[in-house]
Image 1: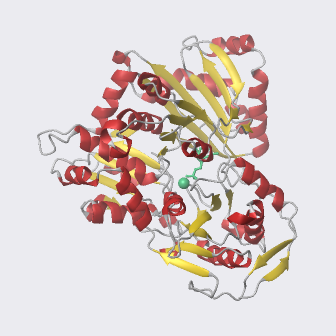
Image 2: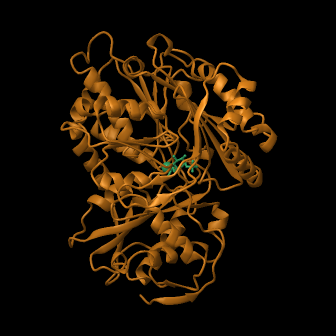
Length: 562
Ligand code: VG1
Ligand code: CO
């Protein structure tokens, strides 16, 4: 093939957010838009990670509309930039966790490895998202994404091998290797979990489950793992065929968007036909988030990561020798903190976004981590689902055909009895006017300068909430590389352990999304069984009035409550 140098000019707005660059497909289709970003990425990496003799690149996605064309462009640009070869999942499909597994584990025929990879996804939202993962399998850290962005503002050329045939196949010195999208990931999962014990649970007549891939890429892994490896029946899987428009749905695994699953599990408005299954789970578009449900029971993601951490050593073979440490994102509830304290584990609180966990994991100080946004475990979707199935299988191992199985609800309620319960909810205000959102945030920061004034206002709103004892903007210093991330969310911390957190989303493609996180800790076991929206009502009231949410945004209610 021949390498062509093309002239280009900077295009505004190519700053990667919480994770990668996300824009509408129409934006990505503009001339040079994708090309600029891809070239800026290659230029941001050290040359040995691009042109190294054993360096491949991995490139795939969740099958989102336009991904196929984008993959072709990336392959041609990779070849022109001196990459040795590109690895692509069958049909251009790979989940985010699978890309990570491929980068870490896969070895080419000639002993070569991948030095990184592009992921094309819509993740949990419409639009298209391009993320770059590094050699450790994790998302590019801020140091790199900042460089990519800086490059996009000065770029004047890119390189492409236009005559490379569109079809995958080796061409002399450049090789496009298309491989089974599920093999590496399944191999990795088998090295972590005991598939035999899970198989026994799934075979029990007392156990039933339902898995919803929301038409994202998780479906291909679900079919392979649940049907082929674990012997489940096909009727356990719904929406497991990836579609380029996610079947018109919104691939965000929460109580609002995973409607069909929620209804089946008996959590919908109308009661389902027949008895709901014992266990339910849903995934986002690129399969790195999950929602866990029991029969008529919702497990908050913050509880989910705490419960996995509390049970991992016994229930998951990979962790039999102990956990190195645990980590959560700042807005995630403190349920994990209580487990860490009780079990004497190293604990880390990081900003929102998976990229911050990577350094901790590579440094060997963190085994289990999670975010309130349904990204739990090692942030690999089926990972969390398999972790839950492992816990259920372990708890029922001597009684798998007995009368009554230990349920998801039993496990969560026992956890609350031992560690206390963190009532938790998140309010999302999507597509708010960006200026209004900024003003709201600025007003909250300004308020923080006087705690006595804040407490005066709060007293005027409700008398039944505790005092604010601390308020700040969250800042994080990475303990591994010393890098500092500022302005990671506004916190109001109350004397009784309650918290209010306000953040602007870093992944929205239109306007701004304000996220409000509300949390209250209850240690008294006789009070852990309340309805969470009831228990949190006073704090919600305070949060909305303190922030003047309606005044600033014109919204009397959030778009989504989780
Ligand atoms: C959201 C979530 C965050 C997650 C990120 C990427 O970010 O809150 O926890 O890591 O999406 O998720 P933000 O900035 O919109 O709050 V994924 O599944 O879409 O890569
Ligand atoms: Co995702």
